Length: 295
Image 1 (cartoon, helix red, strand yellow):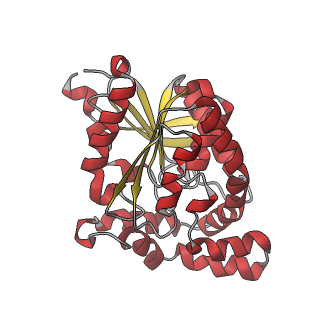
Image 2 (tube, one colour):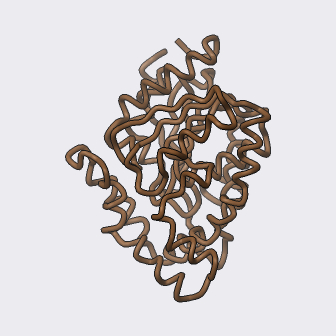
């Protein structure tokens, strides 16, 4: 493995006219790991993890449409649903020729990635879920305002959710339940700047509404876990205000071999524990596929 192989490259891929930004590192011949970010962030959240994985894996981390440095067409020109996000990422993996890969799923990345698993179970070598929920047990009361919007998608209930998009809300998501001195301010500052782009408010509110479709798919995700038993590692910030620890433990119900590790941090666990989580991922993927890990 050369130094060049571990350098992070910043690229874009055209997907049916949509520019998808992504980070790439590691040797092309190594096993692939696809990192899928969540709300309200981007592949920037993986900036510390990628160098830890790159000596062993081919790492790909795209920005979802509407996030980060990927195109963010207006909600009037692009249908912001999780099915549509999964369509784009599926086409993205096709364009890059990714036929087999491990999934790292976080927050919004979970329903996107698990849709890919439902569509192409043969492509998934393993799943690492970092606060990526697939069980109703895992939804905290922090979801109540959004669940109210699902039940009654009125203008009033939509407007009430705009507070989630404010810079102070983004900062709170990063800071809650963590050692705040370890959270880099550029992380939430970048997210807030990109959330504040003209038209992005409707993008995010549309996705809040469509998150209900993910909960409806939970039984199918769970059936996939039971039928295919993908090697699964849940690495969970235990003070996450949105996705509870019981949601991590729940993976064991449908896949008894799932491994669950808790870390004393919050939702954005990589901000404070990238080293520990990175080491655990390398150990896990090396253990389940020892012959496939690059040396």
